[in-house]
Length: 624
Image (cartoon, rainbow, N blue to C red; front, side, top):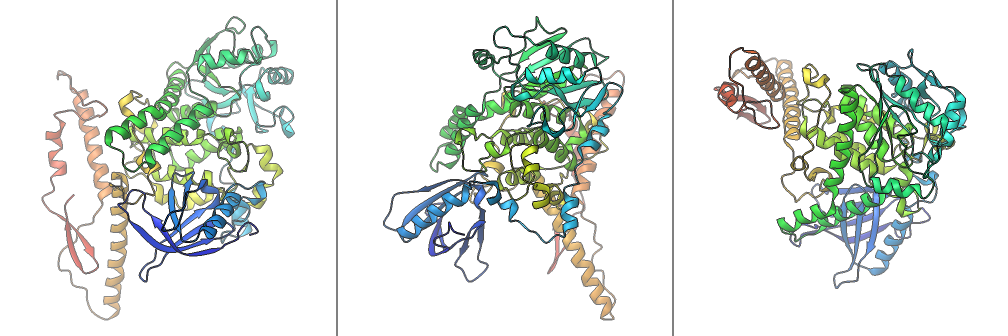
């Protein structure tokens, strides 16, 4: 509270950055954790709550005749423009927000002050929702080939790795120690994901300290052991996620990449994902394009193209697809690394696992994936998300890119993900809010030193309690395609601007709602109406009267009806394909439905009888 000079300012204007000179009058409040704006209206005043840790940039603009403008840009892409009547008040708010949005120590983060109405037992159980030992057991690890090693107990070998690591049984501790000394930050090759069907492994590490000619026998033995741990392949891939020029430049600093002449049975591949600085600049250009009010369509599209953002998203997904193909179809193990093994490596390993394993495409499985590949393996959330006042050059949207890649996969495969985009947006928001302890700090060791699990609450239990809000109505776990390896089509025209991410708070931009959100909303409204109808019938019975049925009501199940129609489509397509002697059916690209399949689907969509839905004051006819 010592940073708050002016806790309340009245007669503050809130400008709509896309509306035509629209503004509302309200009161601005500054608390220890939030910036609050409340409209001055007598009927249903609206409130805006912004966590201080969500604030990325605070800008005090030149004084005008109507007041002092204050612009606030947030990490979740919310942009707020205030007009504060007095310059002194504006200056006080500006200085307070600069201090409150960039704390100097972890103890000042919101996670340590957040105390929801939960018992101590509930808080402790929230941290036990995800157990990575159980996750590796689900993969079939440990087994006859892979074992748990305690070489990193107390973080002796690598302080950015977890303590529980899995390596081939043929590898001894001296081999692991020697390999760690030859890898940047001591991040030696270790198991990330095991694909049981092909006995193939996804392993991860950092770049070797090879320079122009250095080699390490222990590191060579480690890679050979990983290759031999897969009985179905006589070679393994080594995937360097950096552009080749960047990797070659690192050789001058004594780092670099593997020399195929020194490692037996490896196939080396560069995939060309740019570094954190390029990604930071790219997203900054996207933000500028999104925030410009009077852009034409051509200017917007050319600005988006020049930012290179979608090109970078495509590069990450290309690498993940290559990884999934090597493991899922070629049956080969793959070792993935970048420079230090906590940014691009994490993106590619987690997305590759998502493509391979349907469990990670469920609500809880996605939590496990983030916990395993991002949190435990030391992605630098504190630095990349700017949690503390530090070097801004370390800030980069690495996790934002991952979330957007998953959204593009949902757009291509809407029936194989249990969750919708609302789930992705919720997680992305909380990564930057610092409301929960999961993402505080740069690695597990830091979180243990801060005693995170005893001082903060876990995000995972919160998400599970509210998982009904994130369900995808098109998901059907009984479909065969749900359990298959998914192959994204990464041609350029499949990548598009994610409006719900970059304009989720701009209420004047239409349309506001996706089709999936509309289906969920209608389904939820119908459930509420049915509950109200039952309550009214109960009251009528209590009054001693018999409820009269004016019209026989048909249950409204939009989601199930849509699912049944899609099932009928799949069944029809399979029957066509299995019928001998028929001509090949040409399908529309990106769809399982034949071009002439609309004739057969016509009866499914043409409903002779309208659906009747109870409303509060009568009956309404709805056709589906």
